[in-house]
Length: 407
Image (cartoon, rainbow, N blue to C red; front, side):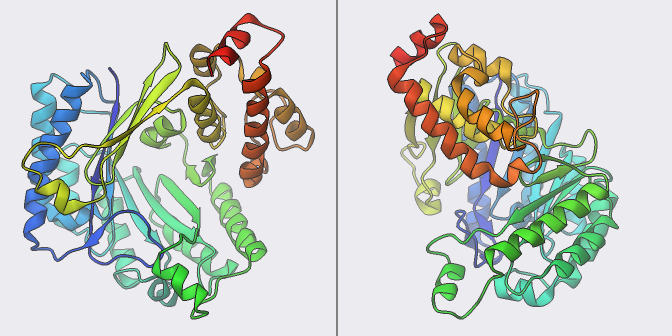
């Protein structure tokens, strides 16, 4: 089987106020870090054996903050992964990404990554504005960003990503554009520009409810993001997904596998994996429990992940949900092989309606750049149409009749 591999590092120096990913603040010398590395290597090897993986197109180490492992910890992890792949006669992947935050991504850490097979670095910057960073609870002062970006350009020239966010507390268009201008001085190959999402249960959500903090109105937040998008496109970065921009040939191959709903394995607390049965048009997803101590100290064997089946209808919906995030839309040949009908058949009315508005491309099942701004509404329409298909079926082709009967 061909599958990508995601490794979740559940540690950070400080948890940001907006973050709802599973992570816990730790000190650099926390004894659990060493135990985590030992366990993650055993888990990764067990997953590759369980699913009989023969080829890995990409590895992504995310978090949390992987750079909290430090050069020493990352060396042990990368050497261990190299040994696992060698024992299984699996080549090192052409794309190997490690996430890092500026306050912990020092020269030794980046050198270790580069020298042990990592090909791509992803930096969590979010904002260059000191007051905004403080309001978000971001670790590290803004002065650290330039130093880290200079190191990224030195160790991963032409192959690093940087995350920025729009719609932040007190942010305006000028602030975001200033940050983009500073970032582009270091020539990243890829930029992720996210709109802030307020997740329930986070400190940010609580502060907003208590009126201790305010965000730009929705329309203003949208204008700020669009201004950032336009600036990146003017600088030669193509928007190839809702929030991702890349120079030619520098798209994230690992993330593209998510958007294409192709196989990936996940290991580490809270990590998930998805395995697709291409012939049946179904899948299976599992999620490792988000409990570090339970995962670390489970001496009776691997902590059992929670699994769910993806039937044909569910997988079709997810293929549309994820695929239309991509500027080329869902892979049409893959869609037909899995489900026995074309995308244009599955959601013909939705595509026609949105194409008339100029939000879907004329000669492709894909959103226009403007259409991506309204993707959520498009997906609602598509899902409503799919529900009709599930109940009524198609009257035009046998594969669609057969498929509808199996939902």
